Length: 496
Ligand code: NAD
Image 1 (tube, rainbow, N blue to C red):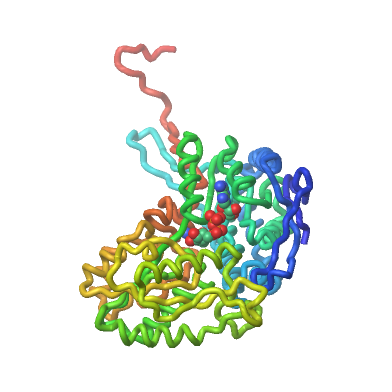
Image 2: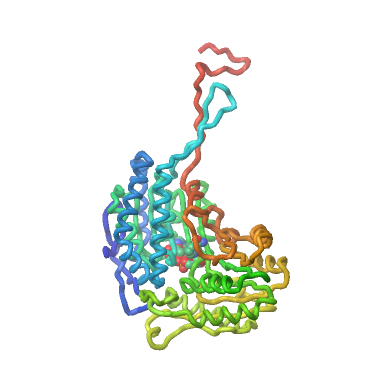
């Protein structure tokens, strides 16, 4: 571990030398490393470095930039196991999920290298016979990449690789919960031969590092993934600066609709994965299961029975399904919402919350909490993101009612319809407000070549994957006169 920032091609400490510790959420006594606690001055240096590196980087051919991403893929693949172990230990994700996180990042980098090998643009007929017209793309300049902890490898790659491919330079601020995974990513890019200043790393907290990266006048684009509360502030700040653009991907209050004709076994499996993978800490985790009332009883029985069999424990153990939540604040948040559900009249089907005995003593472990909320549609607990193993079962009678319940939240990220009938699925796909939808599948499972992003409070409408190429480039028109002259306007002599 370097335990440093990476600015202008050099590993450096924070100005003033402050540091903080990264700890394992499953074993809070285990210090994984120390990283700089940076401030505005460190951000300033990183932005200057990115700005200086921009002209030479954009002048390189797109293929050469793509090849750096290809080399990055080779380097990550060679150390994928080690990377996955670090993800598991720093983010608390079960080891198989940690591997999937790394693989998803590799896939996105491969996809972006593929784009380098598939150059695109447009040659268009002009309105005038003597002209040819083109649509070209230009990079925007310095891009800030600010990321959450729950996909500490994949999400940074989702945002960094399209930015670099198109000729932008980047200042990257990983989550303060997973700084060492962030450092490893940058180290791999360094080994891939990125020129100094093209990718910079500044470690630290949101307010001291993230915010200066948002408002810095030399940052052209802010790519953010994280909570709505932070994303909304970023969008407002960017709106005040006429040059600045942002793409924010934020939280969710995702739901599955389980219809009258649902295959019960499929529904239960999909619901378990949606609600409890990553201990319910995915932006796409389902925390609302909207179930036809005549299937509620049998579904609830099978779902609770399976949830009771979930193995909770050390993420490094292959048998473990659910690791810890990320920190003390997350444990408290889960506890708060579990209690709130009780206060708001929920029928508790499986009481859960903090686990403190035995092997759980030194980590942030929580068990699944499942409740039925039949009457109070306005209950606060049905509307706010919990980001933990906490899920509501809500009955419906008609499809119209199911859609109304589904859409009655301020978020709109992931959705799944469980039905055997194409027309029902088609209706739900049309009527439900979401960005990432599934039929007879869990609400989780992104693919890198599909757009990924939410509507309403879940996103600013510029999803990841290829749509992000439009965010980090400016499309310009280029019109060429292939005629011999420019015709003069009526009333003006053509003689020079
Ligand atoms: P968070 O918003 O607390 O932090 C995300 C990042 O923003 C971190 O790097 C943090 O340091 C930084 N940050 C915090 N305050 C900031 C500020 N004032 N200015 C600039 N940056 C600031 O989120 P988190 O706890 O890391 O992640 C969980 C949240 O992320 C959940 O809401 C989850 O749904 C969401 N998420 C969304 C997606 C998606 O694609 N839609 C993916 C993963 C996670």
